[in-house]
Length: 551
Image (cartoon, rainbow, N blue to C red; front, side, top):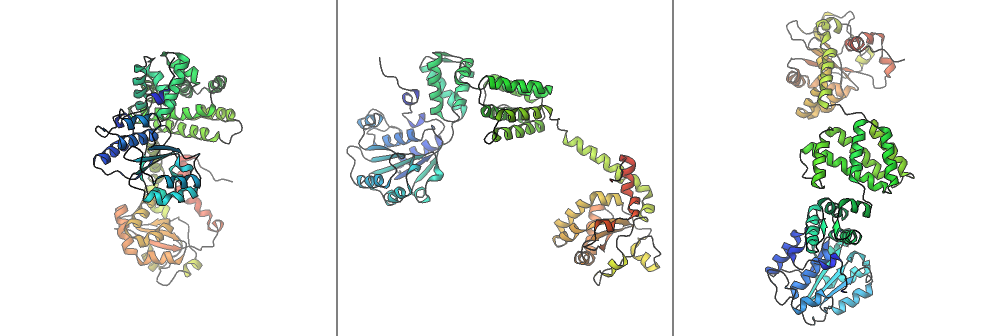
């Protein structure tokens, strides 16, 4: 009986073309070999099981191969066979975790001085190089920067951030990527065909997803499944063998959401616990499930969903039953559930509570519909009193007292309260001629933010002054604004003409601003008067919405 060899070793790539998902690395190395521009040190980094050590061995073989073909080793010459069998004196693989001290690196420095025994180059492959100590890295620096011509260093690591910058700067770096699920499925399908093993598409999908981007992990899972199920493997057998969360449970959750079935959600958690599933894995699967529904709903395509064809079709059908806004809310809630399991004492209770919240979550209202409702309300609030605007304006309570007016800086036009016995000159100051178009106070109040943004864009120096001003009323073509201090009031007065131009641009009516200085230390109570009850906006709100003062 021959010795059994695991799939990861038996089907290890022997050519650069066989390395899956790392074409950006293999094509660069082959071009470097073809143009004789091979570096003296390479650093391969990336997740586990994606081909770092395999690529390092291929590079070591091809630089010493007696008959390389198209940048690939022939795997038949003496040097290639010795590397494949692990008995080459010129290709040395060192485990960085068990040879991490400074003494081991000093021994390596002495060994690199000697020429290779048979091959053209002596290659040192140091796996998990990040495990070396700081002293060991320092001892390696000089040799790594200027090695003998016959030496080639190849480092591999899963934790690039732990390497010193002095090491990184002396190597050519290649980032290995996670392998897509579809590429892993293709590899497993070809291996299964060669081994006369029958797997359906859903079974291959489950094994490939279990690898989580690592081909070696997926191949190890493949071996375990074959040992358990034999030469014919189905998806239900894999679900039972690997205790993978059944995909149907996720679709049950979305069905319960549509039904608002709280009792069903609690029963589902009981089912998940009874089957022995890991609750964190279940919650993370729910997050991905919502993501798949969102992708199908938002894009109208399932190309970005990592699932079998059967489930991709179901995602397209189910995603159409929810709005993108609702799916994003569901995903945010469940993402918080999954992340909280690290510190929650009772994960089951947390999952139950969040699923109940999910069942009771009201549907999101369309934003466009909300904006239309707001526009309709604004029309009621601001357009209704236009016919009585002149009479109402005359009842606006005084904002600034005589004492406040006296504190205005020289150069500011003092204002008297509206509605008192004013002199003729004052009437000329605050009243617009009858021929001048009037501006609606409701329009000023509703669009003041637009005007502030316009000033901030076109007159940056006035932006702060206008942002600090608050509309206090409209008299004809004069807009009265409250200012918190004389400085801002002075700015508005000195730039009155420029602000009038901007008012005309914003409201299509020629008007001007009249600043009123308000005491900074005055309390809200001191500013409230019984006359505020007659404000036109308050009247409309009381009439249309039934509002009343809060006690």
